[in-house]
Image 1 (cartoon, one colour):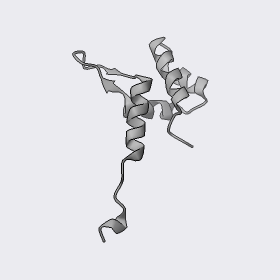
Image 2: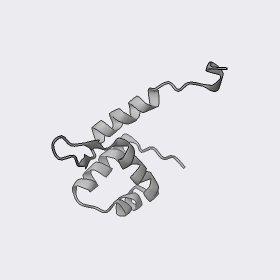
Image 3: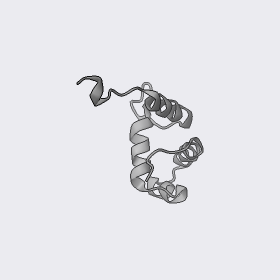
Image 4: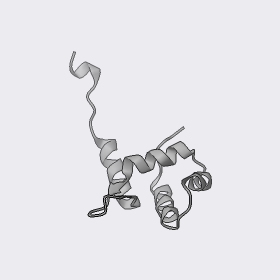
Length: 80
């Protein structure tokens, strides 16, 4: 089961959150598990300036996901 959303799913998630749709309902509409939606929000939400509240923006979430995907991870054999 893939835990990462497509850019289109991120746009839908952002729209439905702005409309006040419950996260469980969003998961049902996207055909994803609730855990996937909660993980996406935890990983890719940003703190809004001055309000200290977490906000989800699909474009920013995609940037964060792309940066994380291309980050090189050290392999065990890199440091024997």
